[in-house]
Image (tube, rainbow, N blue to C red):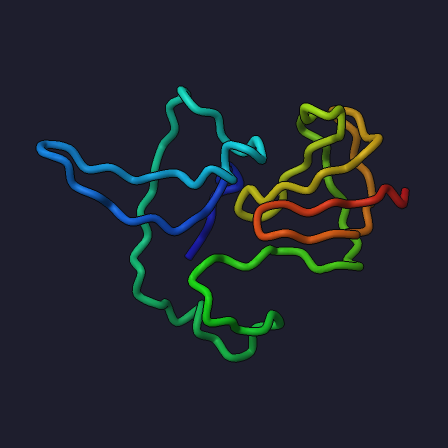
Length: 132
């Protein structure tokens, strides 16, 4: 499956029914990390929950886990070149990589392309220290 570079976040959610409407709830962490904002309009794509041949490939470099949550696309110690797209509420640079996954880059400015070493990895964001 091909994933757009415009993807802001990825999460699992249940579709609930209420009278004549159906709702997909967005996890609080997606708002808190700044991937998306409440009150804004976004395009939504729904992906089958059936495993694909690609996702069940045993040659994957990441260990498989029983969790249905997507795994972060970076590992601690990994070096990445990233472009800072935004500044967070605390003044840190924000870069996005695969699937819209956020890497926070302290000390970076918008528009900078920097080499970072990933120092911390969470389910919905990572922190990278500027190397170059």
